[in-house]
Length: 398
Image 1 (cartoon, rainbow, N blue to C red):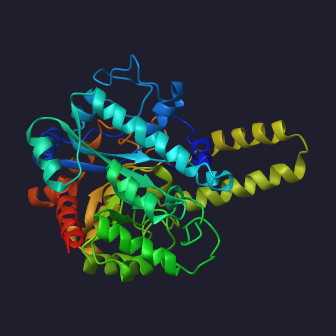
Image 2 (cartoon, rainbow, N blue to C red; image 1 turned 135 degrees about the vertical axis):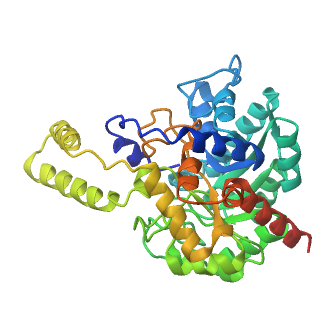
Image 3 (cartoon, rainbow, N blue to C red; image 1 turned 90 degrees about the vertical axis):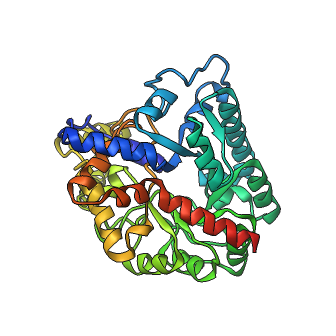
């Protein structure tokens, strides 16, 4: 889930993307049915907690809910075969010792959501994913988005695993006591000794070490320590968009040796090469307004006017595909997956053409247009993740 600030950058509704070639779209849809399509990051549980405190009484996800970021009909339209639901709470909750409490609320709403929906089934293994997909349901898995929620306890990590978690992102936007985040100051130069023990315990339990959100040094340390494939559950290539949340080339090369997978993200700030320049101009405009105006409302109004005159570049399906091309070039076709990171219902947070969970076939139609083979598409859609997951499970068994 992006920082709350990102929502403020979601400006105008994007123009409709060009329609993909009908034959390629049909071919992509058929391939995604086979794969199965595995998405490693969706924030629907947080939306459900914001909606009546997570009370699911009367909520039928079997019908379309345009106010939510996912529901069963739209997941099926997008050909999703397996979805990781995110356990998320702001890393600022570390300051009030509420992280674990909020994490348990998220686990509860995910498990209750799955229990109530016949189309969903909780999956714990790669075999579970394939079985559930064959039976016509959507496999539901759990990812913990931030090591702050374990509150420095390996015992809590073990409980998360028992509740169904199959990955943990080591940090979110802020550092934890044992690892540096990509978007915070350098504090530990990567992982501390306890941070290394967290990686080893994740390996032992059979949970992916997730390196989205962590600093480049934390990425390198985790890859050095891990004895199982790691993942990036929702990240892109830094060479295409130099956002600190994205993966540098030297780490991509290490990932190829590790057998891990980068699951590409559809959020415009992490996909568009034009984002860093826009962010710099946005910051300069805000600073100029604050220097000239004393009234906070006047500053806000002035910034909104600037944003209207200077819309965010927005990103495109083609630019997401450029990230995939680059990861393939550096790390190979086996290192690519999908982690869209749908987190709101507005559609303006994502790149043009990939606004909601119905959109996945559009991306794969673009890859087919670029010459990706059927086997390439099957790998990116889910088989790379399943392969890495089985290797992770074997490492845990050892």
